[in-house]
Image 1 (cartoon, rainbow, N blue to C red):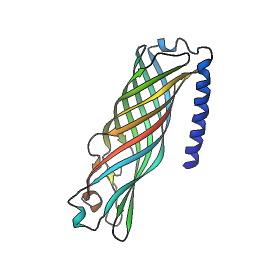
Image 2 (cartoon, one colour):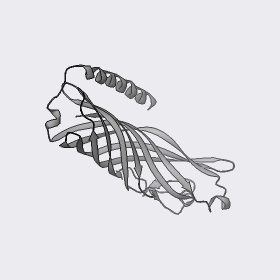
Image 3 (cartoon, rainbow, N blue to C red):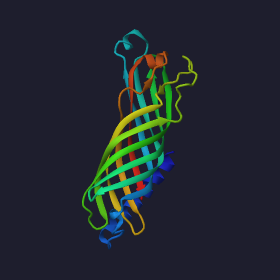
Image 4 (cartoon, one colour):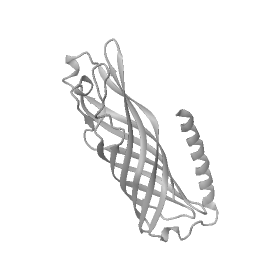
Length: 232
């Protein structure tokens, strides 16, 4: 996974350098922004995390000392539909977007630790408002934000569990919001957009199952930092 991650970073740096070079070239795709509807696809890498809030009344009465989390890099792939509203404003639908993420919880006891893996394969739908700067030759800056809905195709809610084989599950359907910024870079045959975005969920995403590993927690709040490459 780390090798793939490194290759994606190198690939991204090369594309961004080529894109910045195109700023000083002759204008590309001059009529592109006059079209009402655009389609494209996105490739992304993400770093998912999860906030685990332990019950304050639970810790003093049990041998559990602390709960912490470990983040892992993940990948994603999806489709883009973009509706042009004006020179500086678009509505963007990103659906379907499949994202693979992993976050582990570490339960610390006086003499041992227990690691619980939380893996998800999300099918996301995001409805976003995109505000763009004026175009300068072949480049625009933009900010983007809106709401998202995620369904976990790999949910472990129905998986068998016990004290010896703990499972911590998130509810399959979650809602949240996202916001970020990026650059639109116009090449002769397509538009390339590197983008950084933060995705957070609403409310408590934990599925309570009656076992120690969820009874010790007040809530679980997933979040994600995402770096995307959009091609339109």
